Image (cartoon, rainbow, N blue to C red; front, top):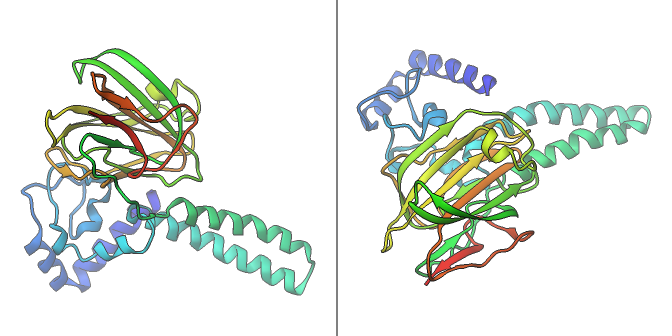
Length: 293
């Protein structure tokens, strides 16, 4: 993260000095009244760490970097892929060179950077998903394994009984989060915390987390809650869902980096059918979690 922030300072200095026409063009298409970032915002790349905060933004047709979403990898993870690869690939090349010119034991050593590079690529993949469109359907907000299904007697936000379903995401899962319903974001809450292993139950309330309150665009306009929770390795929550913004069912709204938890809290009411059970493996946007009749 610090490397990426440093690069941002270098990139902005370069743009101001050598690409003033580009800076003027981007300023002309920029929307919003205030800068929510602690640095100058010259193009959409500068909003990465503050994308869910009110302030500057660009309409999709004015964002020159939307093509990065078609690469098959999470746009929010491209910087990490470049940074990790810039270390792992030269190391792998060195070990292969030494194996060819010296001891064959270097082939074994080459497996370490090779496997690490493969994991980095695998972690940040962004597969396409077929999203169910039936009315009343709630889809999984994350990839992973169901490790908790709990009834809540009274939820203060939902204002009634609720059901909490938690997903554990290992480092081998896709970590992009998707909207479980067609919804409007009515509020978000961020809380600093610890970085306990996401396998530990207490991580749900002790770890750093970001919570979204989502109101369904379908009648009767239920309110549900989605939590992004960090883990022992996952130290970064990414969320670009702003309050007041609408999402289609299965649309991407953020990601958590390197092993974590995602929780979904649903209103418990007559006609709710929970379709997952403990131990089930689910996929964000495509696995049907529950259905309201």
